[in-house]
Length: 103
Image (cartoon, rainbow, N blue to C red):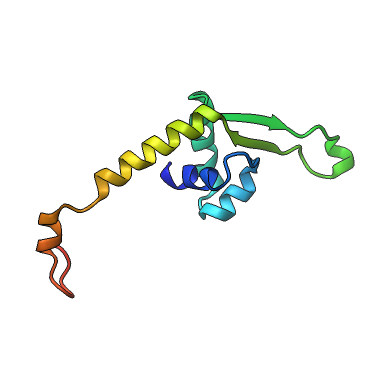
């Protein structure tokens, strides 16, 4: 979830498409679309569908995803909280030995 939120936060006003998100994150569709559904259910995303005739365009209509202002605000807070949780403590840093990793 952090990876996809990071992509959205690069430019919160930009509309993203599922395929583009797969390319940017390296995640398969089976991972991207459930994450997008969760974000939409939480009302962090707005979703728009292209107004095209699939027969004329030769492809299905794409869905565009964009963070809501509230979604962007909460995403920033949650990613900051995650960063704080993952930040090593001074004790962790003292336990590091070159070439050996954490002891």
